Image 1: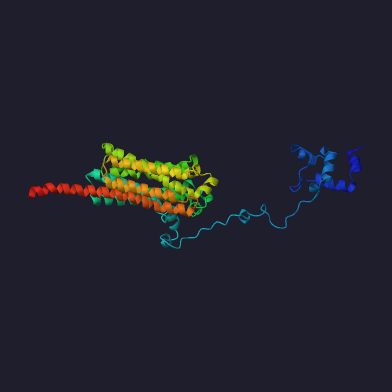
Image 2: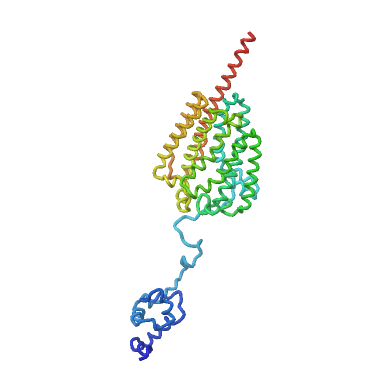
Length: 422
């Protein structure tokens, strides 16, 4: 008996016609997979009817989900809607709005993306880069003769101009490396390169111009400073890469931002290689500032902790989220101990140990106790203001110690002259 006659006896003619129409025509994406047939043979079963067993036809005929026609949606679904139209439980992210207040609002519109690239409207990073330079200048001043206040002020002004330029260059390098990561982080998604207001090539050319401007400032210092400053460029370029391979990129940032703790000595003519006390002080001050950088940047990293986890960006805040306060306390202790070691190496007086070390211990302890690491606004407030609070008291203690030594030595030099005149 032919297979056709056998099938027509087992299955009603109308139903069989319906089945063969569904099974033996060109498969459609709306049809369900054949029940009872291995996936590897489904395509053959659709084109070769003899592979279909009677059990398969019976199951297909009597099973409601397989018999029923696919439901045609009356409203668009996520499969037919564009990504932007898919409903989300998260609030919509704000679009970019050109600045209407502050310094950036006064610039020509074509300049604004470049000003945003160097964070001209957020100068806190420049201050953090400048403070180690100021610390080393004030610490080295008594060893340089002592250096006159005019020389110290002039050197400090050169350092702050260099800090603004090089911090801008560092931000541009960071954004160039992170141009594919920044769009996935809420805080950074509207940066100029991330939102395509600046092309990577334009950013690269602009970064080159900043490095040339930084070189022009560097050449205003004694030429020895050129050899001390050049290695820091490798650290500037490597920090963005560190975020991809280690949970401790803040240490690389610390190596970069703390470089100024060395520069104040050669800037005032103190030879680090010939002066063991100055070399020891520079080493202690440098490592002290590394601890300070990791401390404040760990607080800063808590602002992006959720987005960093999603984007695959590593940070010390992610690694030590549950014990952040303990890590911050350890870093503060290390910073103050190393700062005291730097002062002891150059014979600093009570003004330094009470003002700088004692002041730093109080301000850091208060900040660590008060900062709410779960609040983005609170982390930002302490990041911005902690710079001035802790950096300010350290600077005041160093300045007081330097001025006391400078004017004390000046009085001692005047006494023999007065005796000779008498």
